[in-house]
Image (cartoon, rainbow, N blue to C red; front, side):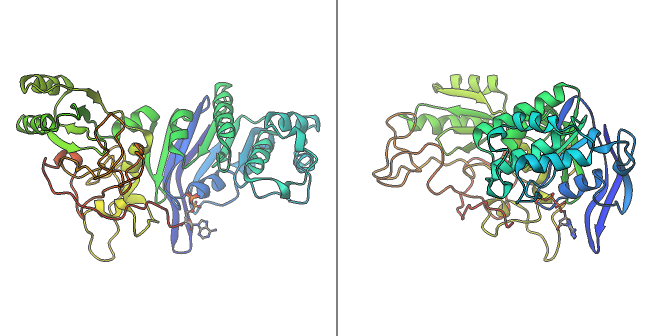
Length: 410
Ligand SMILES: Nc1ncnc2c1ncn2[C@@H]1O[C@H](COP(=O)(O)OP(=O)(O)OP(=O)(O)O)[C@@H](O)[C@H]1O
């Protein structure tokens, strides 16, 4: 088990990690999540004795890493796959690590096989692709057959087959009773790999809970309601009836209604009473990505000036920092998930647009003359400058548009 108590790290004026306390237990994959610069790598370096805490402590099996008897046999880590002598053959690189730690040479060939690099074992690692380098780093972590494993972004650069392999490897290591602590920015991958999550923002603990609990604690439930696209007046009628009944109705990009504040059976009854046929009535299942975005919005340090979400926050006084999210409550005052369209308004067909994904009705978001692409709108609408929660947004509220690039500044 890894245990951090009051772990703090300052670099000059910069507090990279502040008062972090958590446990990483054996027998489970624990995901370590946080925005860029939130302190994940710093924390991992302190766990591995590569950085000294300014305050607090972190132990593995009760010992600080540097006092751990035979540490390379107990703890394996992939921190930076590029930290390899490029002139060495992959096998020689692993062999030198093995010799330093008293690990028999035959183990090198075993781990080369495990990571699928046996055919390039005699190739210099400077010629390796990003994914091959990651595999070599994972091989080094596995070398001592350790009970505790740390992986910093292990799927970086891996192809889909490699990502699946890492996922299965992490799970099987945990199933063998090992402690597996893995950082990643790939939420879809974490959702299917991790059992437990530790989420940090600006060096502080935001969440320490199971993936399931994290998603339910940080997501907004809503119902998707679809009426026949051939009769747009039914959609209007239903939106009015739902609003009258106390629901909050918004429009999805694909023509669905997003309804909050009313349980599904009630929505069905209201539709029946209004004589509106439904083609879909489904509960929205929030993804880990949505929950994570909701939880960490206030802890993001690096954000594009053209980020759609930049406009979803209450304006702050000059120089002020956005409030930190409250552990277990997410980020107050933020959309989750960012709705595709603000407020209910019927989508306007684009002349010459190709048919939409649900039949003959034109896709209102397609560009004229461009084939329908159901996955994403050509120009996704964005949010107004200060937007309330989706559930607080009245039907018929005005739409706004803005650039929607969501690239990170780093
Ligand atoms: N050696 C160092 N000297 C000064 N500042 C540092 C040092 N190492 C990290 N930092 C700072 O500490 C903060 C946390 O960095 P860290 O690399 O731990 O974040 P991270 O969560 O791993 O980020 P990413 O997701 O981008 O890898 C950053 O602001 C970083 O600039």
